[in-house]
Amino acid sequence: MTQKATNITWHQGLVTAEDRTRLNGHSGAVLWFTGLSSSGKSTLACAVERCLCQRGCHTYILDGDNIRYGLNKNLGFSPEDRKENIRRIGEVARLFADAGLIIMTAFISPYADDRQAARNLLPPGEFVEIFCKCPLEVCEVRDPKGLYKKARAGQLKDFTGIDAPYEAPLNPEIVLETGSEQLEQSADRIIGYLERQGLIPAQ
Amino acid sequence: MTQKATNITWHQGLVTAEDRTRLNGHSGAVLWFTGLSSSGKSTLACAVERCLCQRGCHTYILDGDNIRYGLNKNLGFSPEDRKENIRRIGEVARLFADAGLIIMTAFISPYADDRQAARNLLPPGEFVEIFCKCPLEVCEVRDPKGLYKKARAGQLKDFTGIDAPYEAPLNPEIVLETGSEQLEQSADRIIGYLERQGLIPAQ
Image (cartoon, rainbow over all chains, first blue to last red; front, top):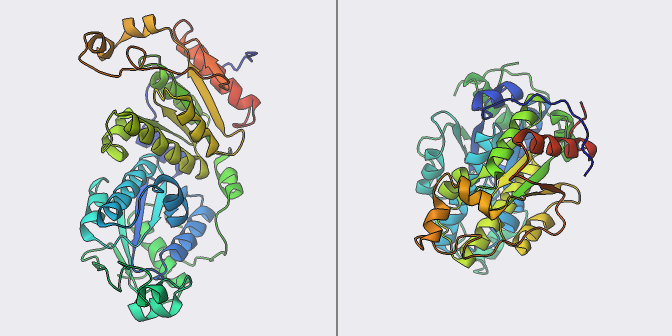
């Protein structure tokens, strides 16, 4: 390998959380979206990410597409596997927040204990639980992948809201009526919350 | 929740890789450090991260400290668990690179197949295998945690280099003689490589 002179000045010490905050213009945080299938979690996370990106914030979304076919492809839908699925997502979210990003997770995450465990990995204030509160009837009408239909027909077992429980958050940081309010309005509420909490700079 | 007017203009569409590159000033990449225990992987990754941070690049390091006690705390050191350990690290590295970061992994990762699997998750050119080529004798003298001593005494089983194999990379992007060359020199070589490959802007 040919060595090119780079005239680098080498500095001691680790890159700190403060260094990352200075570089990014904001600190790391986890926005944990929870709600029934088709309640609008991913759509909302995408809208929020688009907005944050426009403002120069550093973000990423963990969702079924990049997790279930990658990191968690060796997990199924048994109770233990569901628990491990959310555990790993929580751990990865923690890494991203530690790296200084605003990381969004868009999973049903139906069990309160599992969400609490994910919350416990983060410093206070850096975990924002966002409840996408959409009536089951509305989710069933949306049903873009026909999952509720299959679940009602008995072709899908242990489907959240049909034959598996959804434990609604008792004290989430944000509740959004995603069955009735407009996407823009919901996303606006999240951005407003992040500003008020000082998680992103106000504009 | 009180709604504060934020006058947000909502934009359509996903945040793309191009958006992230524009925001960060560089694209995502994986710097995969491999080598024996005490060969200098973590020290070198820290030095490189320090330098990249000074240059405004967005980075993170996955190492034993943040992985073995978090995401992979349910894995031991059996052959299957070692394989799964590296598989998960590869998947998480892919997510970070997809998020636009220069992500460094500092694990022995002794098996060529496992490293190849991690490489296969990335687009060509975005996976940089860095072989920390340090003679076993030097690693054994360093031995800051006394692991080699324990392995020699039979108190640690399946220790890489002692009673478990290390498969040296055949075609790594970068080979560093970390037993003899200075840390600054090794780090300099990596920065030079990243510049020449266009993975970071030249200075």
